[in-house]
Length: 485
Ligand code: NAP
Image 1 (spheres, rainbow, N blue to C red):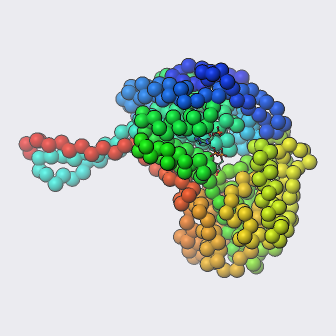
Image 2: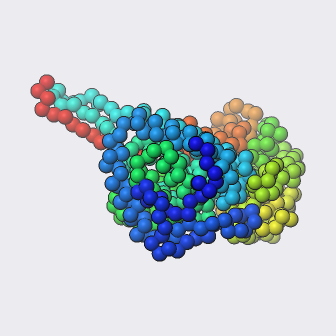
């Protein structure tokens, strides 16, 4: 059914099937990053509301886990259809709170629906095993069961699809969920409650609480009824959550920060590399965990690459996400602008040269110019720090070994990209890079069919692919004896 934006823009928690305020009545303002105006409020909830959401999820779990995978898949297909029927409206809501261009928001909502459909199908293929028994009169079964209540915490950069990757496997396997969306973009998270109601999920299967990150997070981590924490966000917060879940030994999945390298070899198709670079750098104004943080370009092609990338960056159309033709929206807030400015100043102080953009955009607010910086060197801050903005630092390298070493010289290991026309090099470099996601001659590679997830300090576990359900399942060994065989 088609709905208006007001139908999805809820200003209440979704607990046990009811829309409720924070106990204190306090709220948080939600601001449109394109114009700085407040577009509404959501509850400032804390531990008590979260505890009630967990209890609702636990109560629902007892019957939800007994439903068949086929039944759950049918509800998930309805959920998919409800999302797609309202793709444009949900995209508009997303732009209002997050700022990205409408076309990107439509894409995000579309991939949310695709994750739901993918996991609806995967849930029907959660197989156990019959293991050859060493005993003549006993049989060995290995079964898979839903872990129980999961706690899901998500960031502001993909407020819809990051929840899809968590709710999808939870619903498909028979888990129930308590979700906490980012405070800057809560409406796309709360919209999942509306959509789940429309699809007909029982009360308490999905619960959504907005408010104090530390209070909600602490309750989710410490409450023994929660059996798994799935988090997408910064490495810093992810590490704290891992520590906090230790007390109740929960499963954890962590999708954390990145520091993606993008390698261009002399033998690459330069125009294809520039096209991939634009997509891998400026999408969502550079605010994705898989956005390129460091470009490494081989000496023979370096100057031409910088020239072409700078020309392409200058052509990007910056504007409000809802305006026709916008290719890059604002940054999420002024803190993000200041961070990007600091990184550029650090680089120019150390000898870098700005070849495109370099500062705030004339539109004002948190709009920033698509920027390219040549002469990047390893003592600059973006060698280590996530930029999370539309700035492309370009380093020069001479040899393949040097490129692999520089690319791996980071604590992160989420996405990386490289461009080459040499098949042998493609395999050598792919095998040399310590990253969970590798794009070879491609700048955008996320898809529901493939396992998404980082290595090293970029995280634990996979979302998407057939691997995406594994962390939502407990494995149980059953020995059946006394069979008299
Ligand atoms: P963040 O500050 O870590 O926040 C992420 C979520 O955690 C938000 O919901 C936030 O709530 C919550 N949070 C903050 N402090 C918390 C605490 N002490 N306990 C429990 N929850 C807490 O990250 P962000 O700035 O929103 O997102 C950007 C980061 O996410 C980047 O590092 C990016 O690389 C990473 N990311 C990774 C992936 C991936 O798949 N690997 C995907 C997207 C983004 P509030 O909003 O209320 O503060």
